[in-house]
Image (cartoon, rainbow, N blue to C red; front, top):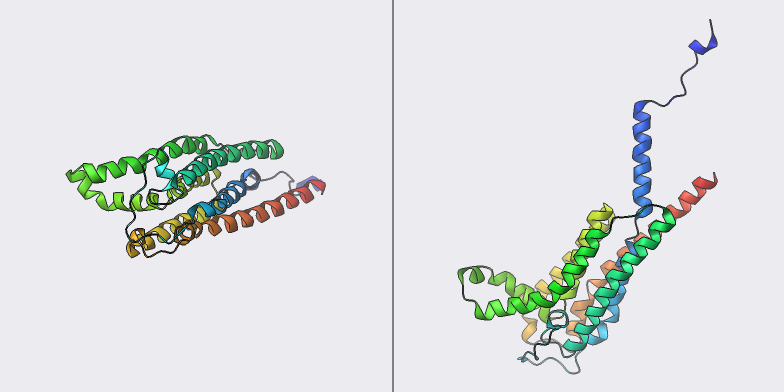
Length: 258
């Protein structure tokens, strides 16, 4: 008999082909990940903003709100450097979104696979103007609109305003953008970092809200501490993601040489 009847076929089976396709998809998804950049960028931008959160003297027990300028939503209503902080965050958020989108395009040209970033762009276009106007609208509704709806949602309105008063509304804008990016990236790692960052923002503001530090009881560095506490989540998460990306790049380079 011919030897061909006893020789196993070298053609891959259907299951092997599907496994190969799945592996290629995972490799492509991993190669396109570049979320370490916005994590490190927004973490650093938060740290750079720290001096603007420092008061010249300890906050008074009863502080009169400063004049409501157009950037109150980003700079905080009770902070001494509210206007400067508002301008900083306006430039930082716009620059951060633009730089992140630019880096994703650069990364896509380098690896040949691109993450769809339209949703992330929309999050920035919508989130930044919303951060400017929402606190002002909530303040107006809380003080001037005595309706059943406003009374039922006053607990949420008060908490959002307390976040805004401490100049931490930009943190929420960052959260929204990263949530959208995690969805686009389909990355479990980024989702974990975003969940940790969002939890840190909410826990810090919840503690300050319950302790009623907004009306006094803080030293001149209190607002800065509140703003900086969530930042290490972004910095550590970004550093780990960068190390992971470098290891994956080295592994792909070795496989190509082999």
